[in-house]
Image (cartoon, rainbow, N blue to C red):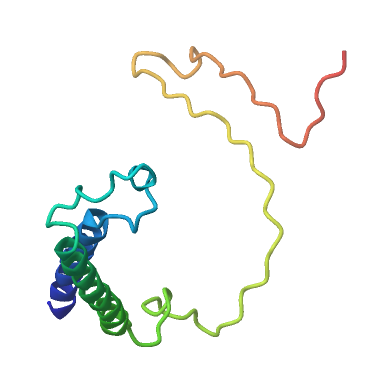
Length: 137
């Protein structure tokens, strides 16, 4: 809960700092100052607006740095790993890897209807063995 409160306050400070910096007038480096028109564009007057916004941005900048450090300290967790919750494998030796067995071809199972006699049953085609050679042409 403390971490969530610090994050919320930090976001508010960030937004206020952004607004304070964007509202400040440049120090005479804009193009209007080059032609003599830079004096009357401040929202709070020529002299007072610069001091209020400059003090506000300095205070908000300090709060920004303190908030970032506080979040880094509070958000830091103890030494851990992404694998900390996973059980370790047992120390049993692995079984020796045996060669995979060759696949055994199985004959298809044919079910016969009850009315058909055993001698009348159609023969299923024989499946070729996997070990036999293909017929030569």
